[in-house]
Length: 588
Image (cartoon, rainbow, N blue to C red; front, top):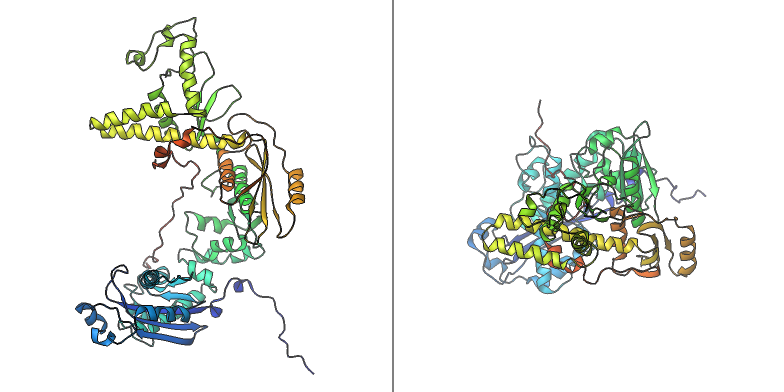
């Protein structure tokens, strides 16, 4: 007797994710008493449930809004007060609709409007709003259709383009049926471009070129684990380094989805292979990305390529110390403040220090035994003129100690001095000058607070911490002098001690270094510290002291909350993204 069991077959790459033919969509449309979900009410709900091109069911009901329908709305929709007088209220209709749409992907034309009304109604009734995935056919149409195909993306226009069987007429069910035909028309158009899963449909962009789509096979062998990916050209040179919690899904978006960063299409055109580096945790992936970018300096990465270009404000180690901008931290007993993301922000911070502390601003090296002529700053009272003997080495050392205390301990004296100056300028209606002093102080306090947090961690010889995972296991990290030395996972139910011991025994050896960041870049220490500060993190072992100044810069909350342009976040990714837009009109 012949077997009737189906023959096993290997799924294709296009079947990864959720194939569109297997997704249940609920296409919904509403009629309302107005355009604001906060002050207007629903008068009709219409919905069509479809899967694989087949209609599974429909939902339609008028809703009594318990308020009068404005005349112009009645003319537009044909729904009058008399029609809804005996209809159910929203507290009866909404639970029924939520049950009808349970487990489905919601679709609407101009989805923010319809879903906004439904969610507002749920909030007023105290009903939990399900975590719906949703699609907006209007937005999708703007991504897919050319300007020479349709003059606009209104539902009536699209229904005519795709020859919908139902003409939209501002009644909920009719409009929902027309939206179903528009959705299927858009799917058919996108199917020819290789879009076959819900994830691809949700993130599709017409700005991804056919040349990019033809290289989808480069993601075939990639795992679904967290890690780092390296795009390489035909010569094996690294073009771009990125990270993801799911390598295969992320890399595939470069070929089929909404990857629209400048020059990415050019990069994908040059790429011949993608090499994965699987990581045990997402933190390891973030850190490895930084290190690989700094190592290979790929031409298409914008940030983290030159960590050695970070700017520091240095208080020199000499008889009469002064402040200077440097790019390298030396083992010279000097005091360093940074790192700054730009020379401009470093200059702002240095100006704030000069405003409050009368450190000399001349650049020549001074000797107590060889006096020289003073500059104009001495005449202005902004310098004690140590160059001509106005201050001894001991007297001048007070100013140097004030700067060191502000950087490593309590900056309140500096803050009070500059703040008083800001207020005085504001009262004199010199608002631009007051704003300049404000920006200087903000740059100083933000960088000082960050340095105090980072250097507190880098002073710890070894720290082991754990964080619970979604599957009730543990992520464990070993940090030595602020550098990520090892990371791993403990499976659910296992005793963590053997795993921790093995991780510590095999962790990277990190020798002592120089400066406030002796073993890693500021960006890496920042990533590790952010992970350690995540709620739920447990400290397992600490060798050394992990502490920040009790009255340090972190206490200056008013200045930390102030948003300065680029002095605030030197590690932020400032890459600009192109706006999502309809493709341009075709030209001859």
